[in-house]
Length: 300
Image (cartoon, rainbow, N blue to C red; front, side):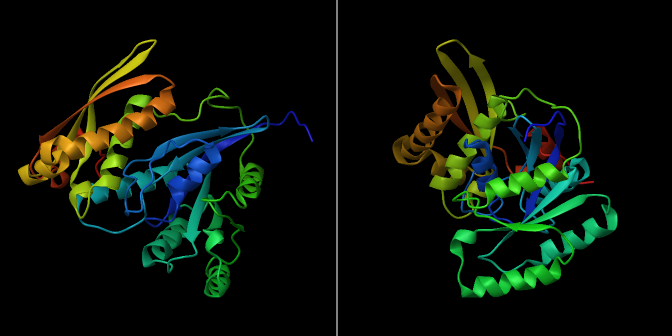
């Protein structure tokens, strides 16, 4: 049914690490823009994805996983979460069926009820594709815990229930004009997305704590009609980590570059020249001035 009424607004996707937030957003956008990894705390900054139809525009904020930590890098991530809550019209609380409900999520929910009581909340039970008998019991427990809040069941991975989720969100959005052109999928610049793509490949190809001691900065980004030239630095904390990222004979960093370049070429639709270098910045994850220089905001 066609209508002249247009709905628009911001939707914060909240959840514990590995709840499937980025996977869900990529499924909604039908494009892999938000980085995904099976390692927790892959997302460090809020990523903005835009879904537009003839009747509405939903601006999604993909946030870091909800967790508690005294580390400065992690506190920056927590700051990002509460910034998204403050900006959003709707809080989309993603609860996966395959892991126990964390105390951090319970605490977050209670704080939202107390400090953000004006916000609309939608509880989204995710990973329905993993449905087994014990999950049915968990769903009943969730219904009790989040009693009175609207909810739906989806699989961000397979797309099951996602259209119903979008319909439900549209009904909850305020009336308003579109904020972005209809064909725009993200408010993030491709330069910033490129840095995240490189970091995703580090997450996929490296092991133990190496991925968490790294960040990626774009030193130069030049777009021409036939080619995009990118020079990026991979920042680590120790010389030993630098050697591991480079790998014997440069094997590891070449693998990171090959995989990142393939994703970026798909995104920009043209050839990409990607030059990766590794730099050591001792204890950058624990120094607020260094964190700020790499774009990680300070926790208030």
